[in-house]
Image 1 (cartoon, one colour):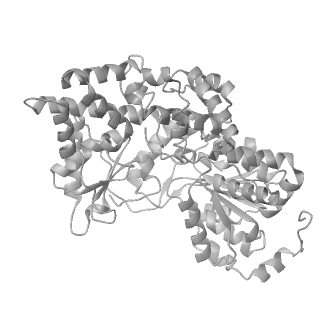
Image 2 (cartoon, helix red, strand yellow; image 1 turned 120 degrees about the horizontal axis):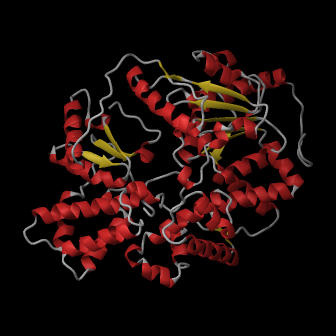
Image 3 (cartoon, one colour; image 1 turned 180 degrees about the horizontal axis):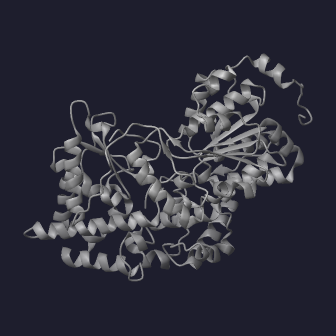
Length: 540
């Protein structure tokens, strides 16, 4: 029933289907395999679709929305489809229109939907909306105690970014400042400074925001949950507006988003989620894949459909992938995971090659890229995927030395990263010679890891990820690896320069590492981190 003040007209399912005259139901399931048809047509809710890589996840999600609308099982005007990027939301609605769904389905991110609903509520109550703090790094930088800044003077631009990441992780996990130290230690977090210092800055951050009537993106979710729980009338209106909930990439949901989803649902069960625990790569930022791997614990009586037919990769690639994923699932205790089944023709056997050094590896990659290029296979058909930004410098250099055009899709090359800029400033400002300055930088990096080197033990430095609103989508490992890559380049320069200086090193870097990026639409090999490559495809 509609809440007071809203008209309600009861229409039977069949009558509603005839009224909207939308897409043909039979056509919507034509061409689907058995598991896909089950996921689209089942009436059981809640529904969890475990969709392995290349199994038609988005196809199933959009077909289910369209099919249930065409058969009168749901009103498309009451559908809310939640995605993790605005681009994904736009693609989803475009697909629905192409399927013949005339009514516009509401689609957006958790933050965007919550913000829109909060603004409408504030407007109805004549409440002046708080200002949205969309850039947190500068705000947090002013809250860092001078003693901490002084002790980390060589990381003046990266320290606030690291602290913001910790605050965002805590808020995503619904951890208050008073509990941060305990929870961070339990989660084995590696913050840039002592947990007690982070907790103090986090507390000051929350207090200062309240004083200035500021809210951040994570506050939007918390405020919306609070309002729904505190006002039954408001909750009824929200739940009447959105009666059918769909969530894409459910493995990336964090506790705060899950709490909002439960608040939107109330005591109803009309929920469909799609995702894959094997593609959960954002746990460092607060996401919890257990919401999908343990879906039945959170939503008893649910149905789980597994999509295991892969339409993207050759049998040979899937054989390798299944071996790796089986070991990963065993470590997680997820013994129900099913191997992906190939549906593509036979292909070449994947090769695993080892090299004596990272420079040899980069040269080997360049040779492979050059050999794969042909008139029928342009440079842009190929991509080189790396774990961190630190690896892009060597790959770029090797490709350039081989005369291969390339572009970086990881948010800028090595020299554009803030931690590298800080390190270069430190080297140029050092009174010691370049060799000594590099040793000091290396010792400082070593000391901050408690005597452990390398990205496996990194604590402060990283890669891109979704859900960041400050352009600071980073984790600890990648930024440390970036500085280590810079030190290694410094050692290379010392080995070839007759009179090495810091100024000469910087000039050499600009000449050998920094390149003019080709046009984004031009014919060039993409060099990308795995995070930045998610959702993209290349033939090679």
